[in-house]
Length: 397
Image: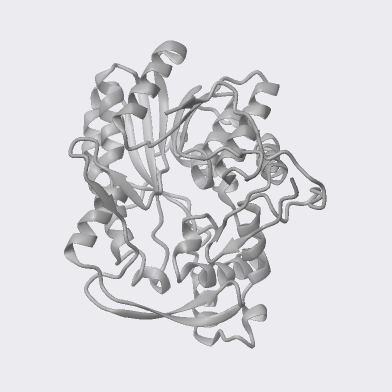
Protein backbone atom coordinates (compact mmCIF):
# COMPACT_ATOMS: atom_id res chain seq x y z
CA UNK A 1 0.00 0.00 0.00
CA UNK A 2 0.98 3.65 -0.42
CA UNK A 3 1.64 5.16 3.00
CA UNK A 4 1.23 8.89 3.54
CA UNK A 5 1.37 10.83 6.83
CA UNK A 6 -1.99 11.61 8.44
CA UNK A 7 -1.39 13.99 11.33
CA UNK A 8 -4.06 14.70 13.89
CA UNK A 9 -2.96 17.21 16.49
CA UNK A 10 0.09 15.83 18.28
CA UNK A 11 -0.19 12.36 16.74
CA UNK A 12 0.45 10.88 13.33
CA UNK A 13 -2.00 8.01 12.85
CA UNK A 14 0.02 6.35 10.08
CA UNK A 15 3.60 5.05 10.15
CA UNK A 16 5.97 4.18 7.33
CA UNK A 17 7.76 0.84 7.85
CA UNK A 18 10.72 1.58 5.59
CA UNK A 19 11.15 5.06 7.06
CA UNK A 20 11.12 3.67 10.60
CA UNK A 21 13.69 1.06 9.60
CA UNK A 22 16.00 3.68 8.08
CA UNK A 23 15.65 5.83 11.19
CA UNK A 24 16.71 2.86 13.32
CA UNK A 25 19.68 2.26 11.03
CA UNK A 26 20.75 5.90 11.39
CA UNK A 27 20.82 5.46 15.18
CA UNK A 28 22.72 2.18 14.91
CA UNK A 29 25.29 3.78 12.62
CA UNK A 30 25.77 6.63 15.09
CA UNK A 31 26.44 4.17 17.91
CA UNK A 32 28.83 2.15 15.75
CA UNK A 33 30.78 5.32 14.96
CA UNK A 34 31.56 5.73 18.67
CA UNK A 35 34.01 3.82 20.89
CA UNK A 36 32.55 0.62 22.32
CA UNK A 37 30.61 0.99 25.56
CA UNK A 38 32.25 -0.85 28.44
CA UNK A 39 29.22 -2.32 30.20
CA UNK A 40 27.68 -5.69 31.16
CA UNK A 41 25.86 -7.68 28.52
CA UNK A 42 22.35 -8.52 29.79
CA UNK A 43 19.88 -5.67 29.51
CA UNK A 44 16.12 -5.37 30.05
CA UNK A 45 14.37 -2.27 28.67
CA UNK A 46 10.81 -1.61 29.82
CA UNK A 47 9.35 0.63 27.11
CA UNK A 48 11.81 -0.13 24.32
CA UNK A 49 9.88 0.76 21.15
CA UNK A 50 10.22 4.54 20.88
CA UNK A 51 12.14 7.52 22.21
CA UNK A 52 14.70 7.15 24.96
CA UNK A 53 13.86 3.52 25.71
CA UNK A 54 14.47 2.55 22.09
CA UNK A 55 17.77 4.42 22.05
CA UNK A 56 18.79 2.69 25.28
CA UNK A 57 18.21 -0.68 23.64
CA UNK A 58 20.08 0.30 20.47
CA UNK A 59 23.00 1.71 22.48
CA UNK A 60 23.30 -1.42 24.62
CA UNK A 61 23.04 -3.87 21.74
CA UNK A 62 25.09 -2.17 19.05
CA UNK A 63 27.39 -0.20 21.35
CA UNK A 64 28.26 -3.04 23.73
CA UNK A 65 27.08 -6.24 21.99
CA UNK A 66 24.61 -6.73 24.84
CA UNK A 67 21.77 -9.24 24.85
CA UNK A 68 18.51 -7.31 25.19
CA UNK A 69 14.94 -8.05 26.20
CA UNK A 70 12.44 -5.33 25.38
CA UNK A 71 8.90 -4.76 26.62
CA UNK A 72 6.62 -2.87 24.23
CA UNK A 73 2.90 -2.16 23.80
CA UNK A 74 2.44 -1.82 20.05
CA UNK A 75 0.15 -2.81 17.17
CA UNK A 76 1.27 -4.71 14.06
CA UNK A 77 0.19 -3.67 10.59
CA UNK A 78 -2.48 -5.46 8.57
CA UNK A 79 -2.98 -5.74 4.82
CA UNK A 80 -5.12 -2.58 4.97
CA UNK A 81 -3.68 -0.56 7.84
CA UNK A 82 -0.23 0.45 9.00
CA UNK A 83 1.10 -0.71 12.34
CA UNK A 84 2.36 1.63 15.04
CA UNK A 85 5.76 3.25 14.66
CA UNK A 86 6.93 1.37 17.75
CA UNK A 87 6.09 -1.94 16.08
CA UNK A 88 8.10 -1.05 12.98
CA UNK A 89 10.98 0.27 15.11
CA UNK A 90 11.11 -3.02 17.00
CA UNK A 91 10.88 -5.09 13.82
CA UNK A 92 13.82 -3.14 12.39
CA UNK A 93 15.81 -3.50 15.61
CA UNK A 94 15.31 -7.28 15.51
CA UNK A 95 16.30 -7.44 11.84
CA UNK A 96 19.59 -5.61 12.39
CA UNK A 97 20.30 -7.45 15.65
CA UNK A 98 19.86 -10.80 13.88
CA UNK A 99 22.22 -9.68 11.12
CA UNK A 100 24.91 -9.30 13.78
CA UNK A 101 23.95 -12.41 15.78
CA UNK A 102 22.84 -10.33 18.76
CA UNK A 103 20.34 -11.87 21.18
CA UNK A 104 17.05 -9.95 21.13
CA UNK A 105 13.63 -10.94 22.46
CA UNK A 106 10.56 -8.75 22.81
CA UNK A 107 7.40 -9.07 24.88
CA UNK A 108 4.37 -7.12 23.61
CA UNK A 109 1.72 -6.15 26.16
CA UNK A 110 0.90 -4.02 29.19
CA UNK A 111 4.11 -3.50 31.17
CA UNK A 112 2.04 -2.64 34.25
CA UNK A 113 0.50 -6.12 34.34
CA UNK A 114 1.72 -9.13 36.33
CA UNK A 115 1.25 -11.26 33.19
CA UNK A 116 3.96 -9.35 31.33
CA UNK A 117 6.29 -9.45 34.32
CA UNK A 118 5.84 -13.22 34.54
CA UNK A 119 6.61 -13.61 30.83
CA UNK A 120 9.81 -11.57 31.17
CA UNK A 121 10.83 -13.59 34.23
CA UNK A 122 10.43 -16.76 32.18
CA UNK A 123 12.53 -15.36 29.33
CA UNK A 124 15.35 -14.28 31.62
CA UNK A 125 15.41 -17.65 33.38
CA UNK A 126 15.39 -19.53 30.11
CA UNK A 127 17.85 -17.46 28.10
CA UNK A 128 19.97 -15.08 30.19
CA UNK A 129 19.99 -16.40 33.75
CA UNK A 130 20.10 -12.91 35.25
CA UNK A 131 20.16 -9.29 34.09
CA UNK A 132 22.77 -6.60 34.72
CA UNK A 133 20.81 -3.49 33.77
CA UNK A 134 17.14 -2.52 33.81
CA UNK A 135 16.07 0.61 31.94
CA UNK A 136 12.59 1.84 32.86
CA UNK A 137 11.15 4.12 30.15
CA UNK A 138 7.36 3.93 30.29
CA UNK A 139 5.08 6.82 29.32
CA UNK A 140 1.40 5.95 29.44
CA UNK A 141 -1.93 7.77 29.69
CA UNK A 142 -3.44 5.08 31.92
CA UNK A 143 -2.58 2.18 34.19
CA UNK A 144 -4.60 -0.75 35.43
CA UNK A 145 -3.55 -1.56 38.97
CA UNK A 146 -2.69 -5.28 38.92
CA UNK A 147 -3.87 -5.78 42.50
CA UNK A 148 -7.16 -3.85 42.59
CA UNK A 149 -8.04 -3.91 38.90
CA UNK A 150 -8.81 -0.18 39.06
CA UNK A 151 -7.84 1.84 35.98
CA UNK A 152 -6.09 5.14 36.73
CA UNK A 153 -5.72 7.93 34.15
CA UNK A 154 -2.94 10.50 34.03
CA UNK A 155 -3.63 14.14 33.24
CA UNK A 156 -1.46 17.02 32.09
CA UNK A 157 -2.48 19.93 34.29
CA UNK A 158 -0.98 22.58 36.58
CA UNK A 159 -1.23 22.23 40.34
CA UNK A 160 -2.71 24.85 42.63
CA UNK A 161 -3.51 27.51 40.03
CA UNK A 162 -4.88 28.10 36.56
CA UNK A 163 -2.22 28.96 34.00
CA UNK A 164 -2.05 30.78 30.69
CA UNK A 165 1.01 30.14 28.59
CA UNK A 166 2.34 30.31 25.06
CA UNK A 167 2.00 27.32 22.80
CA UNK A 168 2.47 26.41 19.16
CA UNK A 169 -0.29 25.28 16.84
CA UNK A 170 1.82 22.86 14.83
CA UNK A 171 -0.85 22.36 12.15
CA UNK A 172 -1.29 26.07 11.38
CA UNK A 173 2.28 27.03 12.34
CA UNK A 174 1.17 29.89 14.54
CA UNK A 175 1.54 30.97 18.17
CA UNK A 176 -1.43 30.38 20.42
CA UNK A 177 -2.31 30.91 24.05
CA UNK A 178 -3.03 27.81 26.12
CA UNK A 179 -5.17 28.06 29.24
CA UNK A 180 -5.42 25.20 31.71
CA UNK A 181 -7.31 24.79 34.98
CA UNK A 182 -5.59 23.20 37.99
CA UNK A 183 -5.80 19.49 38.67
CA UNK A 184 -7.99 18.11 41.43
CA UNK A 185 -6.32 16.18 44.28
CA UNK A 186 -7.64 12.95 42.75
CA UNK A 187 -6.17 13.80 39.34
CA UNK A 188 -2.80 14.47 40.96
CA UNK A 189 -2.77 11.17 42.87
CA UNK A 190 -4.00 9.26 39.80
CA UNK A 191 -1.23 10.74 37.64
CA UNK A 192 1.36 9.73 40.24
CA UNK A 193 -0.15 6.23 40.22
CA UNK A 194 0.31 6.02 36.44
CA UNK A 195 3.56 7.90 35.85
CA UNK A 196 5.31 7.66 39.22
CA UNK A 197 7.74 5.09 40.54
CA UNK A 198 5.38 2.38 41.80
CA UNK A 199 5.61 0.12 38.76
CA UNK A 200 9.39 0.57 38.55
CA UNK A 201 9.53 -0.73 42.13
CA UNK A 202 7.29 -3.65 41.24
CA UNK A 203 9.58 -4.66 38.36
CA UNK A 204 12.74 -4.54 40.47
CA UNK A 205 11.10 -6.35 43.39
CA UNK A 206 9.72 -9.06 41.12
CA UNK A 207 13.08 -9.72 39.48
CA UNK A 208 14.84 -9.61 42.84
CA UNK A 209 12.40 -12.10 44.37
CA UNK A 210 13.10 -14.45 41.46
CA UNK A 211 16.89 -14.07 41.98
CA UNK A 212 17.31 -12.60 38.50
CA UNK A 213 19.42 -9.56 39.42
CA UNK A 214 23.14 -10.03 38.90
CA UNK A 215 25.83 -8.77 41.24
CA UNK A 216 26.42 -5.03 40.65
CA UNK A 217 22.99 -4.78 38.99
CA UNK A 218 21.99 -1.26 38.00
CA UNK A 219 18.66 0.32 37.12
CA UNK A 220 17.56 3.75 35.99
CA UNK A 221 14.32 5.52 35.12
CA UNK A 222 14.15 8.63 32.98
CA UNK A 223 12.91 12.08 33.93
CA UNK A 224 12.89 15.61 32.59
CA UNK A 225 13.22 18.78 34.65
CA UNK A 226 13.95 21.58 32.19
CA UNK A 227 13.86 25.27 33.07
CA UNK A 228 11.35 27.76 34.44
CA UNK A 229 9.60 28.38 31.10
CA UNK A 230 8.03 24.92 31.25
CA UNK A 231 7.74 24.47 35.02
CA UNK A 232 4.18 25.76 35.55
CA UNK A 233 2.81 22.96 33.40
CA UNK A 234 5.54 20.33 33.69
CA UNK A 235 7.78 20.16 36.76
CA UNK A 236 5.34 21.99 39.05
CA UNK A 237 2.33 20.26 37.48
CA UNK A 238 0.86 16.77 37.61
CA UNK A 239 3.55 15.12 35.47
CA UNK A 240 6.22 16.75 37.61
CA UNK A 241 4.52 15.37 40.72
CA UNK A 242 4.78 11.90 39.19
CA UNK A 243 8.42 12.46 38.27
CA UNK A 244 9.16 13.62 41.82
CA UNK A 245 7.68 10.32 42.96
CA UNK A 246 10.50 8.61 41.04
CA UNK A 247 12.94 10.53 43.24
CA UNK A 248 11.22 9.12 46.32
CA UNK A 249 10.84 5.55 45.10
CA UNK A 250 14.43 5.30 43.86
CA UNK A 251 15.66 5.59 47.46
CA UNK A 252 13.93 2.37 48.50
CA UNK A 253 15.03 0.61 45.31
CA UNK A 254 18.64 1.67 45.89
CA UNK A 255 18.49 0.48 49.48
CA UNK A 256 17.14 -2.91 48.40
CA UNK A 257 20.12 -3.45 46.09
CA UNK A 258 22.87 -2.90 48.68
CA UNK A 259 23.59 -6.58 49.24
CA UNK A 260 24.07 -6.99 45.46
CA UNK A 261 26.46 -4.03 45.31
CA UNK A 262 23.79 -2.64 43.02
CA UNK A 263 22.56 0.86 42.33
CA UNK A 264 19.40 2.67 41.24
CA UNK A 265 19.33 6.22 39.89
CA UNK A 266 16.94 8.59 38.17
CA UNK A 267 18.46 9.97 34.96
CA UNK A 268 17.61 13.52 33.87
CA UNK A 269 17.62 13.85 30.09
CA UNK A 270 17.24 16.81 27.74
CA UNK A 271 14.08 17.89 25.97
CA UNK A 272 13.60 16.01 22.70
CA UNK A 273 10.73 15.42 20.31
CA UNK A 274 8.90 12.24 21.30
CA UNK A 275 5.30 11.12 21.02
CA UNK A 276 4.97 12.03 24.70
CA UNK A 277 6.61 15.47 24.64
CA UNK A 278 4.66 16.57 21.56
CA UNK A 279 1.46 16.18 23.59
CA UNK A 280 2.57 18.78 26.16
CA UNK A 281 1.25 22.18 24.95
CA UNK A 282 4.30 24.23 25.93
CA UNK A 283 6.91 21.81 24.58
CA UNK A 284 6.74 22.16 20.75
CA UNK A 285 7.40 25.91 20.94
CA UNK A 286 10.08 25.52 23.60
CA UNK A 287 11.74 22.75 21.58
CA UNK A 288 11.69 24.76 18.35
CA UNK A 289 13.42 27.70 20.07
CA UNK A 290 15.81 25.38 21.93
CA UNK A 291 16.83 23.54 18.74
CA UNK A 292 17.78 26.79 17.04
CA UNK A 293 20.00 27.86 19.92
CA UNK A 294 21.61 24.46 20.52
CA UNK A 295 22.31 23.95 16.81
CA UNK A 296 24.03 27.34 16.73
CA UNK A 297 26.23 26.17 19.62
CA UNK A 298 26.76 22.73 18.06
CA UNK A 299 25.39 21.01 21.16
CA UNK A 300 21.98 19.74 20.02
CA UNK A 301 21.41 16.04 20.74
CA UNK A 302 18.70 13.53 19.99
CA UNK A 303 17.75 10.44 21.98
CA UNK A 304 20.61 8.28 20.71
CA UNK A 305 23.32 10.86 21.51
CA UNK A 306 21.85 11.34 24.98
CA UNK A 307 21.76 7.61 25.73
CA UNK A 308 25.32 7.05 24.56
CA UNK A 309 26.50 9.80 26.90
CA UNK A 310 24.36 8.50 29.75
CA UNK A 311 25.80 4.98 29.54
CA UNK A 312 29.42 6.01 28.97
CA UNK A 313 29.75 9.13 31.12
CA UNK A 314 27.33 8.33 33.94
CA UNK A 315 25.97 4.81 34.49
CA UNK A 316 29.20 2.98 33.63
CA UNK A 317 31.80 5.61 34.45
CA UNK A 318 34.22 5.28 37.35
CA UNK A 319 33.13 8.43 39.18
CA UNK A 320 30.06 9.30 41.24
CA UNK A 321 28.79 12.14 39.10
CA UNK A 322 25.38 12.91 40.64
CA UNK A 323 23.43 16.08 41.36
CA UNK A 324 22.40 16.98 44.92
CA UNK A 325 19.38 14.65 44.65
CA UNK A 326 21.59 11.74 43.56
CA UNK A 327 20.45 11.84 39.94
CA UNK A 328 22.47 11.38 36.77
CA UNK A 329 22.36 14.54 34.62
CA UNK A 330 22.84 14.66 30.86
CA UNK A 331 20.68 17.75 30.39
CA UNK A 332 23.73 19.96 30.93
CA UNK A 333 23.96 21.29 27.37
CA UNK A 334 20.29 22.30 27.38
CA UNK A 335 20.58 24.04 30.74
CA UNK A 336 23.78 25.95 30.00
CA UNK A 337 23.27 29.59 31.07
CA UNK A 338 23.85 31.05 27.60
CA UNK A 339 21.39 28.67 25.92
CA UNK A 340 18.69 29.36 28.49
CA UNK A 341 19.31 33.12 28.38
CA UNK A 342 18.76 33.13 24.61
CA UNK A 343 15.74 30.83 24.80
CA UNK A 344 14.10 33.06 27.41
CA UNK A 345 14.85 36.18 25.36
CA UNK A 346 13.27 34.68 22.23
CA UNK A 347 10.33 33.28 24.20
CA UNK A 348 9.38 36.80 25.30
CA UNK A 349 9.51 38.12 21.72
CA UNK A 350 8.09 35.19 19.72
CA UNK A 351 5.14 35.87 17.40
CA UNK A 352 3.60 34.53 14.20
CA UNK A 353 5.73 36.97 12.22
CA UNK A 354 9.12 35.97 13.68
CA UNK A 355 8.41 32.29 14.47
CA UNK A 356 10.69 30.99 11.73
CA UNK A 357 13.53 33.38 12.54
CA UNK A 358 13.57 32.96 16.33
CA UNK A 359 12.74 29.23 16.34
CA UNK A 360 13.67 26.24 14.20
CA UNK A 361 10.19 24.94 13.52
CA UNK A 362 11.45 22.98 10.50
CA UNK A 363 13.75 20.97 12.79
CA UNK A 364 10.90 20.31 15.21
CA UNK A 365 8.56 19.21 12.42
CA UNK A 366 11.19 16.97 10.81
CA UNK A 367 12.00 15.36 14.17
CA UNK A 368 8.28 14.79 14.77
CA UNK A 369 7.68 13.24 11.34
CA UNK A 370 10.72 10.98 11.68
CA UNK A 371 9.14 9.46 14.80
CA UNK A 372 6.63 7.87 12.41
CA UNK A 373 9.05 7.07 9.59
CA UNK A 374 8.37 10.13 7.43
CA UNK A 375 10.78 12.75 6.07
CA UNK A 376 13.64 10.27 6.39
CA UNK A 377 16.42 10.79 3.85
CA UNK A 378 16.74 8.08 1.23
CA UNK A 379 13.16 6.80 1.36
CA UNK A 380 10.97 6.96 -1.76
CA UNK A 381 7.53 7.73 -0.36
CA UNK A 382 5.90 7.39 -3.79
CA UNK A 383 6.49 3.62 -3.70
CA UNK A 384 4.07 1.13 -2.22
CA UNK A 385 5.27 -0.82 0.82
CA UNK A 386 4.15 -3.90 2.71
CA UNK A 387 2.67 -2.68 6.04
CA UNK A 388 3.11 -6.11 7.63
CA UNK A 389 6.50 -6.58 9.31
CA UNK A 390 7.32 -9.57 11.48
CA UNK A 391 9.19 -9.43 14.78
CA UNK A 392 10.99 -12.73 15.19
CA UNK A 393 10.33 -14.56 18.44
CA UNK A 394 7.95 -11.94 19.80
CA UNK A 395 5.71 -12.90 22.71
CA UNK A 396 2.29 -11.26 22.33
CA UNK A 397 0.16 -11.15 25.48
